[in-house]
Length: 296
Image (cartoon, rainbow, N blue to C red; front, top):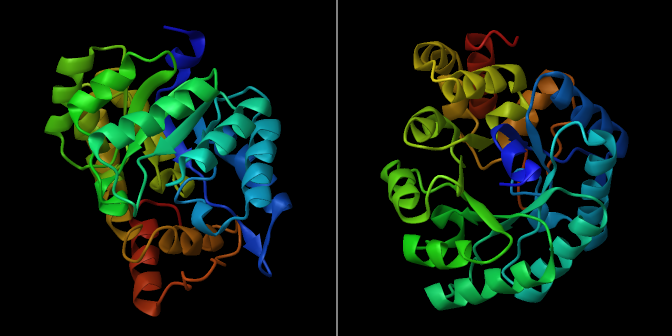
């Protein structure tokens, strides 16, 4: 296991991308990255779904990754979102991420065009063959409509750069099945905040988190407790965070998170169409969850 592999664990924030008047707010993003590290976040994940990657231009996408790497300055790993339902585009984004110093890339299973298992294998092999840094498979059937099988994942893990999975299936048994088939060196990261505690209990080593945008210290503490085997401590933190785990998805991610971040004074709540700002009902629910966690 390489040093980079060993560092890919704990609380990893799927970073929101701040906007102001329709443009990427670089100053706010730089401050946000530094705040995340100061709060104990173990790794940073820019340009994922939470970062509104579907509505970033290629130049914006690349710029977000560049700034994240520069501001992190090696203090924590940067796992750059580099996914697309076009294999050619996924390869281009992954190559760029590697070229600017990202430690790893997060590549989603292709969405909308519904590839077969063999198609997914070929897609990820193309990304694997194009770069020399670890690749985390992002398996999220709820958004991509396809679900990578354990068998396909096992085939991919035989390739040089395939290192692990961000599992957003919310099927806790999948962790044990993947562990049995691929072994302990395959990095399993939760992609669903609400079940991250149970995920680690079955062999996971971290969470790529939406909630850690707004509660980075608590999310880091929860992950550290589980990785130390202190599930009683982790459960107490989970009880504080559970309303946030729910309400961050009251409306489409990252709408609630952007509103929460605006309440904390970290960035504008501005999102890009077709997303629209949080409704009043969402705002009330998020406010209550923030108060329950002791954040406001």
